[in-house]
Structure formats: structure tokens, C-alpha cells
Image 1 (tube, helix red, strand yellow):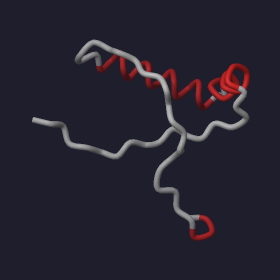
Image 2 (spheres, helix red, strand yellow):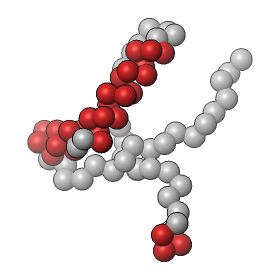
Image 3 (cartoon, one colour):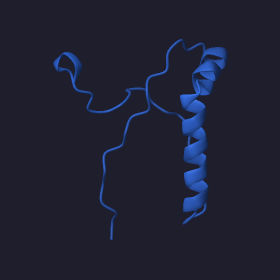
Image 4 (spheres, rainbow, N blue to C red):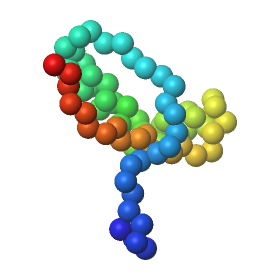
Length: 71
């Protein structure tokens, strides 16, 4: 914690997109997550946001809190 500040979660921006995947498509979900993370890490997402949405800065995507799976 630099300067006594600790990041508890990432980002405050709203994500306005979603993907529908077949139930149980874990391999597809993992691949989509991997590609989106790579695009984010390489700055491609920020570049597209600047180009098409006129956004100078993207905040990190929030880390969702762990929840239990309903029975």
C-alpha cells in the first residue's frame, strides 16, 4: 500500500456490453476473457475508446466480488 492507500477494487466505470454464450461454454468464455484481457493490456481497448468514444482515459474494469452459486 503506497502512501497508506490500498486499492480494494479496480475501476468505477460502467461496462455497457454483454455476450450471450451457450450454457456450459467454459472454454469459449475463457478464450474470450483471454483475448479481451490481451487487448486491454496492449492498449487496444483504450485506443478504440479514444477513437470512437472520445474517451481520454479508461478506468480499470471492476473486479466482481465472489458470490456463491445458487443451489
